Image (tube, rainbow, N blue to C red; front, top):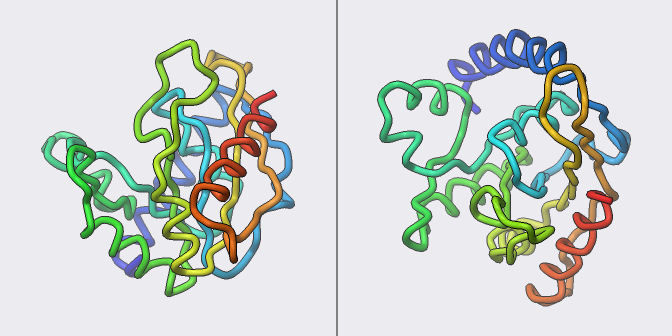
Length: 191
Protein backbone atom coordinates (compact mmCIF):
# COMPACT_ATOMS: atom_id res chain seq x y z
CA UNK A 1 0.00 0.00 0.00
CA UNK A 2 1.49 3.32 -1.02
CA UNK A 3 2.00 6.12 1.49
CA UNK A 4 -0.72 8.24 -0.15
CA UNK A 5 -3.19 5.41 0.57
CA UNK A 6 -1.85 4.54 4.04
CA UNK A 7 -2.93 7.83 5.63
CA UNK A 8 -6.59 7.64 4.49
CA UNK A 9 -6.63 3.90 5.36
CA UNK A 10 -5.54 4.65 8.93
CA UNK A 11 -7.97 7.57 9.27
CA UNK A 12 -10.90 5.46 8.04
CA UNK A 13 -9.84 2.54 10.22
CA UNK A 14 -9.81 4.81 13.29
CA UNK A 15 -13.08 6.64 12.54
CA UNK A 16 -15.18 3.91 10.94
CA UNK A 17 -13.67 1.23 13.16
CA UNK A 18 -14.70 3.20 16.22
CA UNK A 19 -18.26 3.51 14.95
CA UNK A 20 -18.35 -0.20 14.05
CA UNK A 21 -17.12 -1.23 17.51
CA UNK A 22 -19.53 1.12 19.28
CA UNK A 23 -22.54 0.14 17.18
CA UNK A 24 -22.08 -3.64 16.99
CA UNK A 25 -19.92 -4.30 20.06
CA UNK A 26 -18.34 -7.34 18.36
CA UNK A 27 -16.54 -10.07 20.24
CA UNK A 28 -13.09 -11.03 18.88
CA UNK A 29 -11.62 -14.43 19.76
CA UNK A 30 -8.23 -15.88 18.78
CA UNK A 31 -6.58 -12.58 17.78
CA UNK A 32 -3.28 -14.00 19.07
CA UNK A 33 -3.38 -16.46 16.13
CA UNK A 34 -2.76 -13.68 13.58
CA UNK A 35 0.90 -13.67 12.45
CA UNK A 36 2.56 -10.29 12.88
CA UNK A 37 4.77 -10.52 9.79
CA UNK A 38 5.11 -12.28 6.47
CA UNK A 39 2.49 -12.71 3.76
CA UNK A 40 -1.04 -13.46 5.02
CA UNK A 41 -4.38 -14.19 3.47
CA UNK A 42 -7.39 -13.60 5.73
CA UNK A 43 -10.14 -16.01 4.68
CA UNK A 44 -13.60 -16.24 6.21
CA UNK A 45 -17.27 -16.86 5.66
CA UNK A 46 -19.25 -14.06 4.03
CA UNK A 47 -22.68 -13.18 5.36
CA UNK A 48 -22.76 -9.37 5.55
CA UNK A 49 -21.20 -6.29 3.99
CA UNK A 50 -19.43 -5.61 7.33
CA UNK A 51 -17.53 -8.93 7.39
CA UNK A 52 -14.15 -7.45 6.42
CA UNK A 53 -14.11 -5.16 9.47
CA UNK A 54 -13.20 -7.83 12.04
CA UNK A 55 -9.82 -8.71 10.54
CA UNK A 56 -9.07 -5.04 9.78
CA UNK A 57 -9.65 -4.03 13.40
CA UNK A 58 -7.76 -6.99 14.88
CA UNK A 59 -4.63 -6.47 12.84
CA UNK A 60 -2.13 -3.61 12.75
CA UNK A 61 -1.22 -4.28 9.13
CA UNK A 62 -3.36 -2.96 6.28
CA UNK A 63 -5.42 -5.63 4.53
CA UNK A 64 -5.98 -5.43 0.79
CA UNK A 65 -9.43 -6.91 0.32
CA UNK A 66 -10.50 -8.32 -3.00
CA UNK A 67 -13.79 -6.60 -3.86
CA UNK A 68 -16.18 -6.96 -6.77
CA UNK A 69 -15.47 -4.57 -9.63
CA UNK A 70 -19.02 -3.21 -9.46
CA UNK A 71 -17.90 -1.19 -6.41
CA UNK A 72 -15.15 0.37 -8.50
CA UNK A 73 -17.60 1.14 -11.31
CA UNK A 74 -19.92 3.09 -8.98
CA UNK A 75 -18.62 6.68 -8.74
CA UNK A 76 -20.34 7.16 -5.38
CA UNK A 77 -18.22 4.52 -3.64
CA UNK A 78 -15.26 3.82 -5.99
CA UNK A 79 -13.06 6.43 -4.26
CA UNK A 80 -13.51 4.69 -0.91
CA UNK A 81 -12.52 1.25 -2.22
CA UNK A 82 -9.51 2.69 -4.05
CA UNK A 83 -8.10 4.57 -1.05
CA UNK A 84 -8.82 1.57 1.17
CA UNK A 85 -6.33 -0.43 -0.89
CA UNK A 86 -8.92 -2.87 -2.25
CA UNK A 87 -8.28 -4.94 -5.37
CA UNK A 88 -10.97 -4.83 -8.06
CA UNK A 89 -12.13 -8.32 -9.12
CA UNK A 90 -14.26 -9.20 -12.11
CA UNK A 91 -16.27 -12.11 -10.71
CA UNK A 92 -17.84 -12.98 -14.07
CA UNK A 93 -14.50 -13.85 -15.66
CA UNK A 94 -11.31 -15.41 -14.35
CA UNK A 95 -9.58 -12.17 -13.36
CA UNK A 96 -5.86 -12.84 -13.83
CA UNK A 97 -4.99 -9.16 -13.30
CA UNK A 98 -6.60 -9.11 -9.84
CA UNK A 99 -4.86 -12.36 -8.90
CA UNK A 100 -1.52 -10.95 -10.12
CA UNK A 101 -1.99 -7.81 -7.95
CA UNK A 102 -2.77 -9.94 -4.89
CA UNK A 103 0.23 -12.21 -5.54
CA UNK A 104 2.50 -9.19 -5.93
CA UNK A 105 1.32 -7.84 -2.57
CA UNK A 106 1.85 -11.22 -0.91
CA UNK A 107 5.32 -11.52 -2.42
CA UNK A 108 6.04 -8.20 -0.69
CA UNK A 109 4.91 -9.58 2.71
CA UNK A 110 1.55 -7.78 2.69
CA UNK A 111 -1.87 -8.99 3.86
CA UNK A 112 -4.75 -9.80 1.52
CA UNK A 113 -8.35 -10.57 2.47
CA UNK A 114 -10.93 -12.50 0.53
CA UNK A 115 -14.07 -14.55 0.89
CA UNK A 116 -13.70 -17.88 -0.94
CA UNK A 117 -17.48 -18.25 -1.27
CA UNK A 118 -17.17 -15.48 -3.87
CA UNK A 119 -20.29 -13.66 -2.72
CA UNK A 120 -22.40 -13.20 0.39
CA UNK A 121 -24.13 -16.37 1.50
CA UNK A 122 -27.88 -15.70 1.53
CA UNK A 123 -28.83 -19.39 1.68
CA UNK A 124 -29.53 -21.83 4.49
CA UNK A 125 -26.22 -23.62 3.79
CA UNK A 126 -23.46 -23.09 6.35
CA UNK A 127 -21.02 -22.19 3.56
CA UNK A 128 -21.24 -21.90 -0.20
CA UNK A 129 -18.72 -23.99 -2.19
CA UNK A 130 -15.25 -22.45 -1.96
CA UNK A 131 -13.42 -21.14 -4.99
CA UNK A 132 -9.71 -22.00 -5.17
CA UNK A 133 -8.21 -18.48 -5.31
CA UNK A 134 -7.12 -18.29 -1.66
CA UNK A 135 -5.34 -21.64 -1.55
CA UNK A 136 -3.81 -21.13 -5.00
CA UNK A 137 -2.35 -17.73 -4.04
CA UNK A 138 -1.16 -19.10 -0.69
CA UNK A 139 0.68 -21.95 -2.40
CA UNK A 140 2.31 -19.66 -4.97
CA UNK A 141 3.52 -17.17 -2.34
CA UNK A 142 4.06 -19.40 0.72
CA UNK A 143 1.58 -17.15 2.56
CA UNK A 144 -0.21 -18.13 5.73
CA UNK A 145 -3.94 -18.67 5.40
CA UNK A 146 -5.64 -17.12 8.44
CA UNK A 147 -9.13 -18.62 8.73
CA UNK A 148 -11.85 -16.72 10.53
CA UNK A 149 -15.47 -17.52 11.25
CA UNK A 150 -18.25 -15.02 11.78
CA UNK A 151 -21.31 -16.06 13.75
CA UNK A 152 -24.26 -14.23 15.19
CA UNK A 153 -26.02 -11.22 13.75
CA UNK A 154 -24.93 -7.70 13.02
CA UNK A 155 -27.34 -5.90 15.28
CA UNK A 156 -27.16 -2.83 17.45
CA UNK A 157 -24.99 -3.31 20.56
CA UNK A 158 -24.09 -6.93 20.20
CA UNK A 159 -24.58 -10.28 18.62
CA UNK A 160 -21.65 -10.84 16.27
CA UNK A 161 -18.51 -12.84 17.07
CA UNK A 162 -15.40 -13.08 14.90
CA UNK A 163 -13.15 -16.02 15.77
CA UNK A 164 -9.67 -16.47 14.27
CA UNK A 165 -8.20 -19.94 13.89
CA UNK A 166 -4.67 -21.22 13.66
CA UNK A 167 -2.95 -20.06 10.47
CA UNK A 168 -1.56 -22.67 8.12
CA UNK A 169 0.41 -22.90 4.91
CA UNK A 170 -0.62 -24.98 1.91
CA UNK A 171 2.90 -26.38 1.59
CA UNK A 172 2.83 -29.74 -0.20
CA UNK A 173 -0.95 -30.18 0.01
CA UNK A 174 -2.74 -30.20 -3.30
CA UNK A 175 -5.26 -27.38 -3.78
CA UNK A 176 -8.32 -29.58 -3.29
CA UNK A 177 -7.07 -30.92 0.05
CA UNK A 178 -6.06 -27.41 1.18
CA UNK A 179 -9.44 -25.98 0.17
CA UNK A 180 -11.28 -28.71 2.11
CA UNK A 181 -9.13 -28.05 5.17
CA UNK A 182 -9.82 -24.32 4.91
CA UNK A 183 -13.57 -24.93 4.63
CA UNK A 184 -13.52 -27.32 7.62
CA UNK A 185 -11.52 -24.86 9.72
CA UNK A 186 -13.91 -22.01 8.98
CA UNK A 187 -16.97 -24.17 9.73
CA UNK A 188 -15.47 -25.07 13.13
CA UNK A 189 -14.85 -21.39 13.88
CA UNK A 190 -18.48 -20.58 13.06
CA UNK A 191 -19.80 -23.02 15.69
